Amino acid sequence: MTGLTDSEERRLRRALTLIGEEAGRVDLVAEPVRRRASQRRRGITVGALVAAVAAGIGLLTLTLGDPNSASPGGGDRAAADAEGGQGQTLLEWVACGRTIAVGDVMAVKPSGQGGRLTVTFAVQDWIKPSQGEREIELDVVDPAVSRVREPWRVGQHLLIVVPQRRDLETDTFGGAELAANQVSIEEALPTAAQTRCPAVWRSEAG
Image (cartoon, rainbow, N blue to C red; front, top):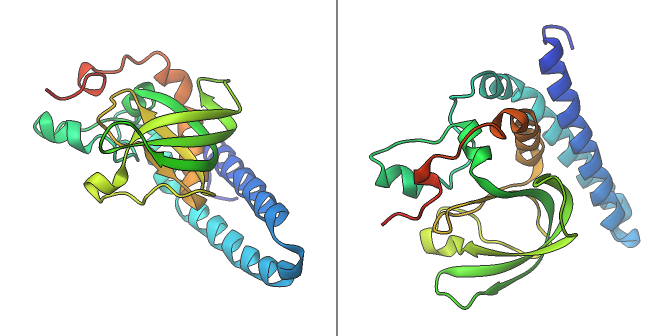
């Protein structure tokens, strides 16, 4: 890994470890009768993920090196528009996350309120808070309302960042984005714990 600093190398190794874990997870759920085709697809997918993370190490470095860099999430768009275009930094994004975890979508159904969903999520790794229940129910904005994000689907394996503000959408990442953003969040977490979430990201727009 010539040309990388110790810090960059550590981040890349962590991302590749996460990709390896994901590849193993996919292998476990593959049906035996489709194992050969599954392995071919998995090889292509894992190769693509490794290439994507390796290519994105520069972006990770820039993001982690600058606490004022923009967050990779998009759930702040509504608040940013309301505040005349004010964006959210990486540290603010992590500090303002109510629930950050990696796991699987088990069920999706409409909630009692229009434009919202109840998502049952089986947690594999807790990030914020550091621990919690193995299965949680999330009350989230339905992505179909804004038509900006992909819909929640049963079986998705995702990194989720649920914002404190209930009127903002949950940021979700899968595949190479999951690994890269998990590393980014884990690196930012200690400093983000000392960062106050600005009021605009805590209260719903009036």
